Length: 457
Ligand SMILES: NC(=O)NC(NC(N)=O)C(=O)[O-]
Ligand SMILES: [Zn+2]
Ligand SMILES: [Zn+2]
Image (cartoon, rainbow, N blue to C red; front, side, top):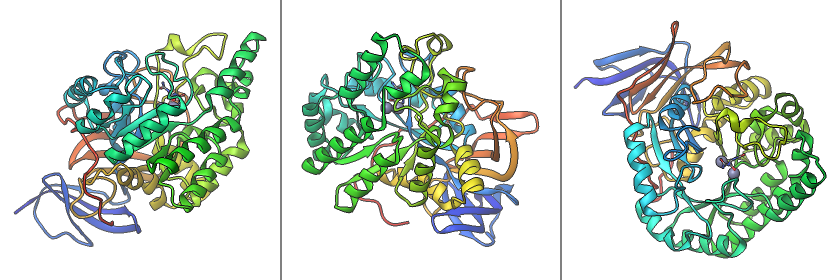
């Protein structure tokens, strides 16, 4: 029997390190990994000189469909993801409208994803005071887990979880065997500090950054960990912006709490000075911090204390990204396309971060944490989700595929460029001399957490 595809002569980035080997694909799955795959194949790719990464599993994106597709949607969002080497993603329950708070909203978003997503996708459910009674049903639908805000989300239709809601939500998540993800910033701090600043007319970039100091994150992280410890729930701390937050997670894990930590490319790439210079395109919460914090995050990543790097891609139309009052501007950064670029340029080339660690934080760890059984690594039986990367190619990022022009990474120079992306053995993106090419026929499938524990890799 002929194979569907052989990727020949590439360097495979496996969990155990890079190895020079061929990779054979049949029915969308990896069926052979060998120095030389001897078999006829319908298609062969010469990957000489390329690194083959497991497709990025971006566990944190906001594609905003339905309801705010004019901000970002499945079509444009998954183009950007595919061009950046992603093959699956987990969509946040906001800023779609309605937000994903019940089974009906799940069904609607699922249908849109199946019709439009170019990549495999999972759906986060929300955990808010409005929908505590819906969590069991959401679990039955197949949500990835439950996302809660500990401070104002920016949208009144997705209210923050007060302590009782978060605690009760964690108990429900524990019963369902699902992870709770928290946006961990203290509402008490952020609310008061922003109010005081605005009352004094202090509405510039520096005023905004100062209104969400590191202690705001540390306090909320500590509280979320306490609740996870008390309830036995699995906790995933999204977009940690400080090494202090990461250290709290590491300490808790060491004493047996089921907690994992995510950071985002923007905390690893930019500093507060960049936010002052670039402006609204780099506004997010928690905010981007100083160069010392950035280095401390890199050190934590190298030490294995950061489990996942998610883009937190959260774009908005240009009119929401301008204005005199920095507090009033929409918070969210467009980064779906550039996660691997940042990790390769700033991590591998500049800070000696090993390639297998980059593959771990972008693919293996998110796949394991959210029990996506067929994803996460180049191993036999796994989905043939591949990102082919020319590691030593330096390029300037000009062709961005997300919905709006405003992207802070536009014009940035990176070493390490995605040449092609394959979802279950089918090419969904290719970099050609004429520009980017997308395959408009492939559609993604819904991913839900496996009910059985995953085996080793
Ligand atoms: N509503 C959002 O998209 N929020 C996101 N915005 C950021 N990070 O600034 C988030 O993850 O909190
Ligand atoms: Zn958040
Ligand atoms: Zn987010």
